[in-house]
Structures are given as structure tokens and as C-alpha cells.
Length: 164
Length: 269
Image (tube, rainbow over all chains, first blue to last red; front, top):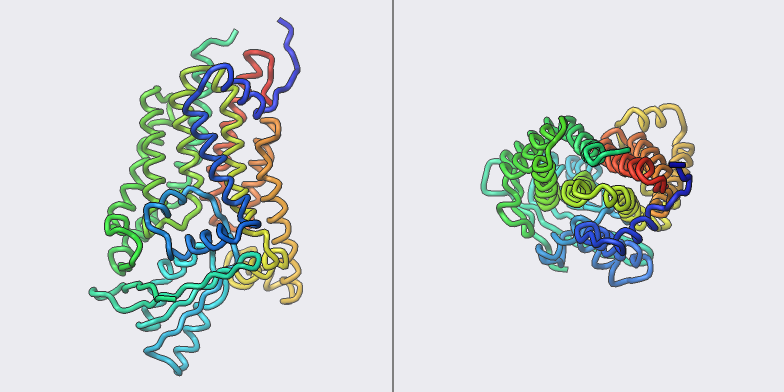
């Protein structure tokens, strides 16, 4: 048989195949991807989605089950995120200035990873500590605050959201 | 003429490409996940958000190391049952790590979760029907890669990223990776700023373009996805954990597309 050189684009092959023979699993995965794609696409035009997305990264205002549903949504280096930390126990000292410098500036979009990953250094600077996050994206700004206080054990701490 | 066994072999190879890429990531990260679990024990963070089970150190260990055995079994001519079990465990492990306090912020588990779903599809639908695997598989691979880059691109459509300010502070001014340390040693701060600006703009353009990879022919899509993943890895050495699964998915899409060409003469891409 003579080999045909005709090329079919994968998107066309996919549509033809699901019309010819239903592939429930394939359709479910494709639908899930397309549904998740809506959120990044409307991000620039919807202030509501922007606020929700920023709050999702700040673990603020989202019930855990709903937040969990959105975890498969990819988000490498999203938004402009700042954080600052004030260590009240050593306020006004040289150590306070050193600690403040160590923890300020831009952070990744999952802003609390700075706290979870930096827990040892944070503890070294002393508790209680006040952490402030600010996320901005195309004119929308969302802020949240947390207090870190010493935990019941030898190390570790309690992370409590501050009312706005 | 290609037999069903040969075809099953193609699907199996595509499956193995994804499994190997994730297994390689786990091997590289194994020590750090012991450290992560140890930190959860030594310095626990009690927060308002995560249920106690999803802060437990043992769960990180189980979710991280559990799928490794299945991935190893999938390396050598896995049976249909082994593929199904490996795929399910892959998805479950990634889902847990996406929800755990100690690991929810790693993009690794986002791409592994989607790669796991792709493996589920290969293990059930793909392995059961040769034509279907070739017609649907390449597009699913491209769709997942598109979503991954779209999620990255959309969050960077801001003045701060376009000016390079964000990446300058996050990477160029602070990171201790060899590349960034050398740039700081070789160039003045103003020039490092300029490099950061053009780096940031390149990232925006590449990620935005990669979001359209679902419309490309299969082989071209696979090639540009692999190149983009390698570029991602180059920007930060620890991003192998994201880059390798993307390469695995892209390679799987290519392998499945080859099958379609060989069998029917109607080449997918």
C-alpha cells in the first residue's frame, strides 16, 4: 500500500476520534483541562477572579475543600507578591533590622511557602512576629496578615490569620 | 503490518516515558523529602487552614515514596494491570502532595498530577484501542502542556514582570545558583537589571506562545515542548522537577503520534 503523506493536526484527530467513537476518559480529561484554562484566561479582565486568585495564594477567604479543587491549576511565578515581617520581641534592635532585611521583598505567588520553608530562620528571629503579604495584579491589590506565636513544643509555631 | 501487540508496545513505551521522567524526579528529590518530613516533626506549624492529617509528616513520606515502587515496576514491560495501578497511585500521590501543608506550593505536583491523569488515560483507553491511542493521545499531551504554560503566563501579564523587576529581586539579586552568582560577579547592577528585564520578557513571550502548543502538529509540539522544558531547567537548576515530567509527557505524545503514522498513513502531525 502506498503510504500517504497527509498530516492531521492532533486537535482535528482528537475531535474526529471522539465523534467516531466515544472515549469518556479522554473527553473528561480534555474537559477538565479546558475548564481549568478558563481561570487564567479571564484573570486579566475580571477583578473578581483576580481577587479570588490572590486570596487563594494567601490561604485567606477560601474554604479548604474549594481551595483543594483548584490546586491542580498551574501557576508558576504568578502576580507581584511582597511580604514583610516585624518581630515585636526584638523591635528596635540591630537583630530586628537584620531579620527585617532577611525576610522582606518579593516572594513566590504561594506566599506562605516563605513562612513554611523559612520556619527555622523565622524562629531564630523570635516570636511573636507579624507577617504581611501584598499581592498585586493589573490594578488589583490584596493584602493579608498573619501572626506567628510560639507553639506548644520546643520548636515550631502557631500561624494565626489577622482580621483585616 | 503492525499487530495489536506492537501497538500495545507503543502505548506502553509512551507510558514508560512519563513514568521514567517522574521516577527520575523522585530519585533526585528523595533526600529533600526526608528533610521536609523531618522539619514537620521538629518544627511543626499549627495553622488555621490545613486539616491535621494534611500536616502529618508520615503522609508526605507515603505520598512521595509510595508511587516509586509502581514506577519501577512500570519500567520493564508493564502489564495492563501494572499500568493501571501505577497510574492510579501516581494521581493519588500527587493529589495528596498538592494538599499537604509541607508540599502544596510545589509546581512539581501540579504537573505530576496531570501527567498521572494522562497515564490513567493511557492505561485504560489508550491500551485498549490502538487507533484511539494514536488519535487522542498526542492532543491530550499537548493540551496538558498548554495548560501548564498558560497558568504560568497569565500571572505574568503585568508591568512588574515586563519591567523585569520581579525576577530581578526573586532570581538575579538573591539566588545563589551558579548562573546568577556569575552574572552578579561579571556585570554591574545596572546591567544585571537589563538582563533581568529581557529574561523576564522572554519568559512571558515563551510561556504565552507555549500555551498555544495544543494547535501544533504532534512532532513539532513535542520538540518545542522539550526545548521549552530544557530552557525552564536552565533558568533555575532546581526546576528539573518541573521540566522532566514535561519532557516525559511531550515524549509520550510523540511516541503515540508515530504509531498513527505507521499504521494508517494518516500521520498525526
